[in-house]
Length: 215
Image (cartoon, rainbow, N blue to C red; front, side):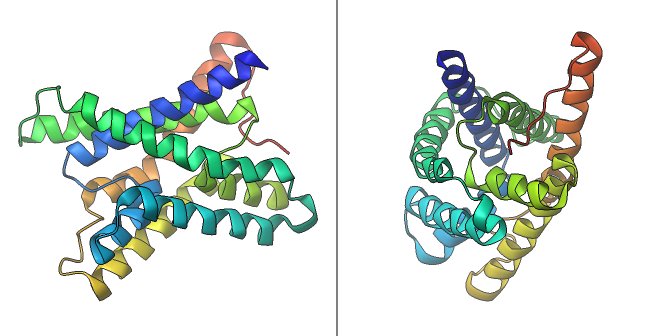
């Protein structure tokens, strides 16, 4: 159990570093944070609060998707929201010490690091089977009821969140690209793909595939 908790916490922290790199890159926040960030821009409410509200709504969505298959331990995702918010603030602080220039090589590097770290964080913390972040929890819930591949659903789910954030900023914010920019769109399609490749490489090396869907 201790090992699972450690993997869970480490995985969340790795993901938060990925989010920090995406914000610092100025190419648009990650898909998992796009709607929360859009809400912050529109309402001027702290992103920690908007993240909690949005993720609570995602937990409700999981209940509607799973119904009788919804396990009470999924409510632990509320704790994840608080922990992930703290890690994100910490990661932004740590990443701020890394030199960054507004040049194409830096944009590409930070975007690539963001995509890889978010995918790798999911790969580390989801198999611990404690409680996913609500975003991945929704993807997992859809995978349970459809038997589709997690990574494939992840791509579609991220693309949907990006689209919603784009519409929100277009309707209620001064800049349609306030929360979403080219980096967000790339991440929406590449995180799921990268997660699949990480799992494939791990399977080749160890002979065992990691299942990120916990039924």
